[in-house]
Length: 353
Image 1: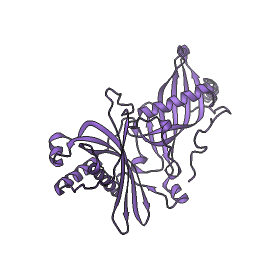
Image 2 (image 1 turned 135 degrees about the vertical axis):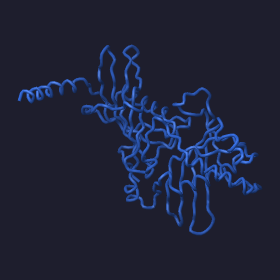
Image 3 (image 1 turned 180 degrees about the vertical axis):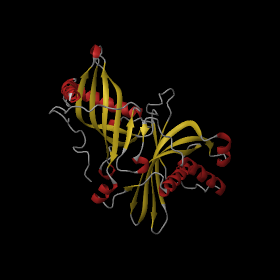
């Protein structure tokens, strides 16, 4: 009986003190908006293999005043995925936001620490759950829209290989490029099948003047050259010739850049079509290129801060990006009536088609 009384008293004592340690803040004040923008910038700079995000709205803001004047601000944010890969040096604000059936949003929890002397915010940790709309939801609202495919699907691998071969064939670059990682894939039925893919590429040490299979054996796979991001579509009609469209942006490497930051200082956009007077490669070289592409498609260079699930497995729960271990966050009190803040792009997480 005494133990029960102690437990009840303890709950009554600690519950108010826990709530009292937090001070609810307005989601619309400039200081909190600036902190939220800083957090999203930090998340974008921290991604090595994903896409850039933009802030949509602040959903909760709490301040926890600690010892010696050091305080922490906890934010709950909604972010939206853009079409810019993390390799792209373009600011996220200039990137196109995915919408309609391609829309992907995320819920982020962020802790920022405030320096008592400078009053400047510094991101301490973050954890985001990035969630695409489920396949059933997309198909129910738009049956004719493209639907996602697993990244290891045979149609995806074949389409990426075909697109890369066309890029290498038509590119004016001296060296071959290889697939670094497939990032998105979808399929659409239109009097046949159309496969849409997005993937990153990296320059190899193999020149087009060399025999590709010998080069791979003797010189290794990658050179420290350019990286790029490609979007492509491969249309296989019920009758007629296969149509391949590929567009790649190359980014020149920046010496001395932190590996956790955005790679590249300027984008060189290259659109490649079929060139006149360009003969076929010899069959032996083409086969070697195909074997090299297949080898690269089976290699996924993950990042230590990105825990992926749905982008590989195409599940409905999404994937997590975070600062790694130790990213547990407290359950925050209810926000003030000035939260959530203004939606910058879309009023709801689920976007209409």
